[in-house]
Amino acid sequence: MTVKELDDKIKKGLGGVYLFYGEEEYLKRRYLEKVRETLLTDDTDAVFNHVKITDGEIERLGDELVGMPIFGSSGGRLIELWDVDFTAMSDSRLDELADAFSEVSDDTLLIYAKPEEFSEGTKKAPSAAYKKFSASANLVNFEKQTPQKLIGWASRHFASHGCAADPLICKKLIDYCKNDMFILASEIDKVSAFARQNGKNVISEDMIHAVCSPGTVFGAFDFANALIDGNTPMALSIFAEMKLRKERPENILSSVSRICSELLTVRILSDSGYSKQDIAKKMKMHEYPVSLRMTAASRKSLSALEKAVELCCDTDLKIKSTRLDEYTALEILILSLGKNRSATV
Image 1 (cartoon, helix red, strand yellow):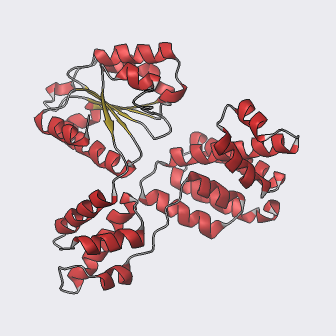
Image 2 (image 1 turned 180 degrees about the vertical axis):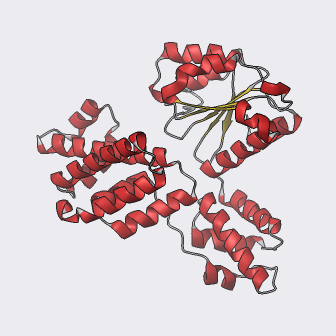
Image 3 (image 1 turned 90 degrees about the horizontal axis):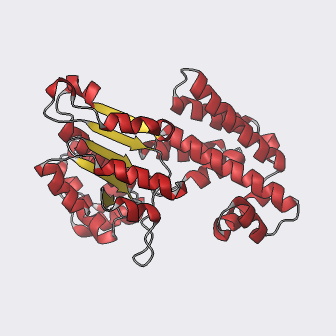
């Protein structure tokens, strides 16, 4: 299903299973909000008719799918499934889920998959999950937008703020701020407000350079490297960008913990004389990501890698055993690793 077809479904009436996948997180989030706004029309009923399930609670899914809207809500029920790694799921488990999806009709089950959790494979060799779910679910691929599509989107975004920006100006904004849609949306908000405050409604290149920040898009690997290096300013900067992209704190911690653990494992195996090929087989990873981790791990001390893994585990425990805010816990993790900079040299 294309995004345009999803738009038509939202207008005509939702029902059944929708699996959001692909690399463009901004559009996935926007359409998630559209689905919520369409189905959860009554704030009172929404408390009961909106269910969120994560991987650790997936056994609840069957029970939730046989439920009925509470209080006769006209909007129906919305069940969201998060954090499930379909790429690691057995064929039999995929079959069970596909069968469960085929039973969904009146309710709406929305599955939000991060890029690493679901792959469609290729046309010649589609993935097992893609083949099994295609018959019973609407699979919506949110691809990274082409430069031309981003220009059109940026122009419309400016227009929603009452400002006009021609294609050339939109391209200059994208080139300056990079093509992350979360960052672009924030920068468009800023420059539009700046223009209106100065009594103007046509965006110029001078305005972009006056209020926008040059863009550099970072990910979990960059974040983990900054943490291990004890580079607190860089880690805080990347963390702020992740928050801007509305990345869930538990997902950030999970990704960083995994990367830190992989870096430590690669370092130990490499120090023990294992080759890149041997490490890839032992860790069940492709050679390319192993080579990246070998390069990164070789620049860290063993004690720094061990400390990073230890503090990630401590942070996860604090989040699960206390009422500490998750974003605050991650900020404490950044500062803690910064204080232990002596262990990174």
